[in-house]
Length: 332
Image 1 (tube, one colour):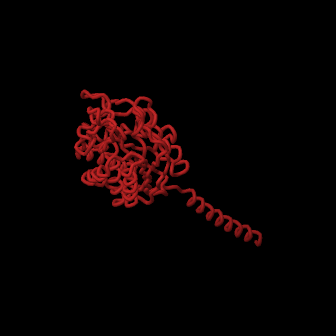
Image 2 (cartoon, rainbow, N blue to C red; image 1 turned 90 degrees about the vertical axis):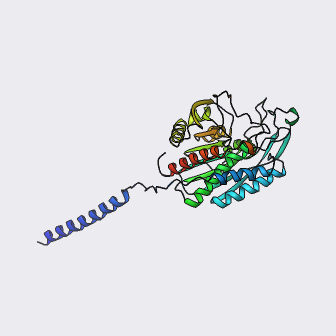
C-alpha cells in the first residue's frame, strides 16, 4: 500500500513538472508577427518645398570652397536637426575643375535609428562651378544657381522629413544629402559624385543596410520627364515598377514615364556598387518628345527659379511620401 502511494505521488509530481515545462515551452516558442501600425500618408506641402528652393538659391552658387557653400551646409544641418533624431556631418576633401582638396561635407539625418527595417533617401546639394552648356560663351565659365540641379531634390526631402517628424513612422529613414556631386569633367568623366563615393565607402553606420533607396536629382522643372534609369532598372526593377505604377494611379503618369531613359553617372551608382543597396534614381532624363537626355537648362544659367514648377515638385513629393509610408505600412 505504501508503495502504491509512493508511485501515485511520484506520478502526480511528474505530471505537474511536465505540465509546467510544457506551458513554458508553449510560451517561449510562440511567435507572433509584430502588428503594423497603419499610418495615413500625410499631405505633402509644395509651398514649403518651393520656399526651401528659394532659400537655397538665395545663398548664390554653392560649390565646395565658397562662402555660400559653407552657409548652405549650416542651413541644411539646422533644418535636418529640426526633423530627425540626430544629424551627422561627414567631412572629406574634394578636388574638381581646378580646385584641390577643398572642404566638402555630406549631411546625414537619421530617423528611428533603432529600427532595422530602413529606407534610404538621397539628393545632392552642391551646384556646378561652370555653365559649359550655356549658349552665351562669355557665361560658360561662371557658376550656376542650380535651382533644379542641386536645390529641388533637397527641398523635397526636407519637407518629407518634416512630415515624418509631425506624423510619425514605424521604419528607419536615413536622409543623406551628398556634397561634391556636380563638378565632374564632361570630357574625362573625372570628378563626379565625390560625396556619394566617399559615403558609400564610409557609411555613417558600420555595415549599413537599407531595404532600398531613392535618389532625387532635378525633380522640380516644368514638364519634367522621369524615365526608368538604367542602373536602377538593373538592380531595383521591382521598386521602379511599384513607384511608377503608383504614380500613374495618382495621375502623375505624365511625369513618371514608362520608358527606358538610359544610364546616368549619378550618386545612386556608387551606393549600388559599394553597399549593394537597390537604388531608384528619379531624375529628369528622357528620350522622347524631341529630347535626348537632360532638360535644356542643364548646366546653363537657365537653371534658376524660373525653371521650377510647383506642379512637378508636388508630383514627386506626393509620390515619394506615399512610397515611404507604404513601406512603413508593409505594402512594399
